[in-house]
Image 1 (spheres, one colour):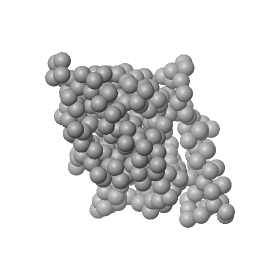
Image 2 (cartoon, one colour):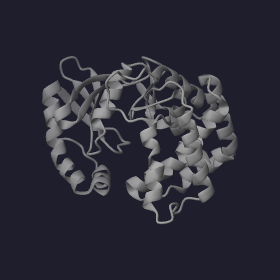
Image 3 (cartoon, helix red, strand yellow):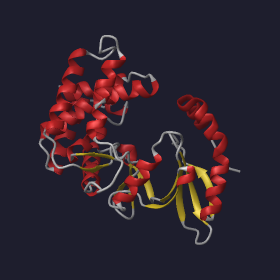
Image 4 (tube, one colour):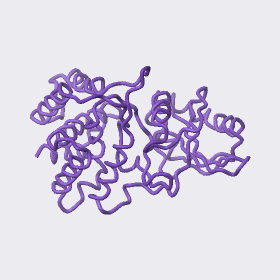
Length: 302
């Protein structure tokens, strides 16, 4: 009845083990419950499934297209749905409803939905991403459970604790500089706002409602300048395959600085330090030391 690709099943079991297998077993019942709750005709899932099951659907009452997102066992449902709701459609996909019992979101269907990664002109893509950033940043909610970029920065401490020498495969100079830069930027942060937290080229879609809309926010509290990090280390490996990736990064930093009104060195510093930290997150999550992400960090360090 419901299409659940074998590749997606394998990925879920690889990253979540027994919890992933148990969730996959429940997934058809979850989808059936959603179809009944919202009177939906559930269609084929999106081809680029990754960490969650995301599928097209239509409301039977008015044939309105919607998106159903069933969250896998990542503990991201509460923060993501809360962030989408707080953005209230400004630069962000709209949240239509939630099914907390099953950790499912009913979302606006974005048309035409082309990904920013498909734009060949990297400079224009960077400008459009900056425009989304400006529309997204919202004052911090009075009551919330969002982590802060200070919390995310504690990854450096976990990295040092993980390796007996405190560094493992990480180049000492790079890691020391990234950690020092990250802490210096934390100490001088501007007024914090609610950030997307993972705003890169595959999380920005072309839209009729606004020119571009974001999806899949993490939800994190920090200064606006922090948001540039995910964009500057993506997409990989495509970024590194360009004829002059260093020049690409130089132009991105300059454009983001100009469009956002943020000091160029601050843009570069957040991009560099987050890229190194992102390598650790990859190790922490899957055991994979991302050479590509470290190469991106080296470009920004230069």
